Length: 277
Image (cartoon, rainbow, N blue to C red; front, top):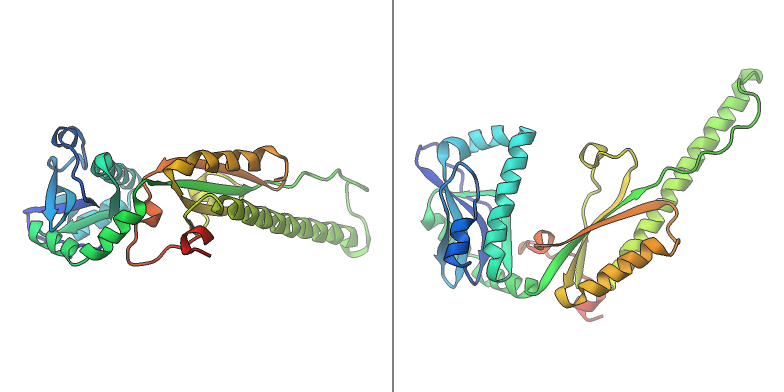
């Protein structure tokens, strides 16, 4: 859901966090905080649905000011954390559809209109997300073990043939290692999909985001029935404990609010269980 373009006026804008059927308890909502610069979180009724929102100053959240702030890493992190707090507050009593960060409207009327125009799809999505949570799995390639050095320490062959041969062998080893890592990542994904009702693969994160030199070969999210979370985590533990993975390292986190599966305008990739195959 994208908000209307923020006006350049000085009046407040409405920042929307999430849609739910059952609004959070008033006391719990009052205890929660969204953006530090805004007012208290509140519930906006939109037909048969509820929207958790916050009034925020236009001077800090209009299009130009927000673009400038989100280009600063510290401000971006603060905004992301504030948005997550708002979504968590909305999820206190039932499933939610989290909205994209910085979903802004000129006022309550435009926010209600945006929800009302998608109410049928939102209801379907809320039904789909009920009693389900998201697990995130990230798989990184491991550096191949170093091979012992052979031959003379310095290449004195004609035209550097020995050096070129070793360089070619190193490139081949890297290609083979990366191919093996990709194959093992695919095996991890295939195994975990057995315990999920839906799965999606995001673009692998860069070294700048992961803080690791080894490449990320899988960045996936799995929508798991709460009743099946134990089976999912046991499958994950089995993958990393039985010694079958030699080229990758697997990391997982969860359970989370299912952000990756809360888009009603695009259907996430489904597993066999959900499509009834």
